[in-house]
Amino acid sequence: GAGVSQSPSNKVTEKGKDVELRCDPISGHTALYWYRQSLGQGLEFLIYFQGNSAPDKSGLPSDRFSAERTGGSVSTLTIQRTQQEDSAVYLCASSFTGSPLHFGNGTRLTVT
Amino acid sequence: SQQGEEDPQALSIQEGENATMNCSYKTSINNLQWYRQNSGRGLVHLILIRSNEREKHSGRLRVTLDTSKKSSSLLITASRAADTASYFCATVGASGTYKYIFGTGTRLKVLA
Image (cartoon, rainbow over all chains, first blue to last red; front, side, top):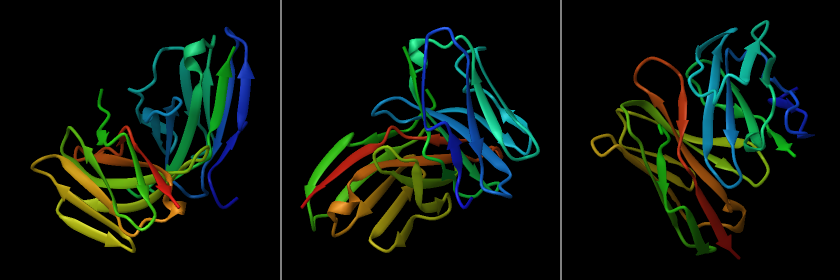
């Protein structure tokens, strides 16, 4: 597709369950970013990838959060044993290295 | 927190008026970018200003950068109802990494 695609667009899960969020970046983009946005708040940096490697994982809130990127393309953000405070919109963005970011529309995660 | 700060947090103006929002950041930067977010959507890149630039224009947008004060401002002239959105600044550090740090955002409402 022409833009960054995220799936699912909405996810409701029970506390304690694991969830996987997917991001399909724009074809050819070398960099991929994950951010978290709580209601009405700014963007909290989670992790970014350069190719398949993650130079900076410093924003991952805890060891329940992990992310991978394969083939320099699709990325998956996994949250294990979800907690209510994980509820937020998770935004993915991609870019050519050093260029402005192109964002997807996000996955709204609700943990009940 | 590494997050930049923006003020005001919220701004309400009449159509045709100018809107000014400010961004402050904490570290040396390579460039600073402004993004717009419509409700429920991802962010869209508006304009980029490099650390050696002081002012930049794009259509009705004017951005200034003062690296000595670690601050930037975004001016939207002759605002329209369609400009209603949240606006975020994002900085790219001068350290050679491409980690984007976003500000807390300004919610702009333009009244018709």
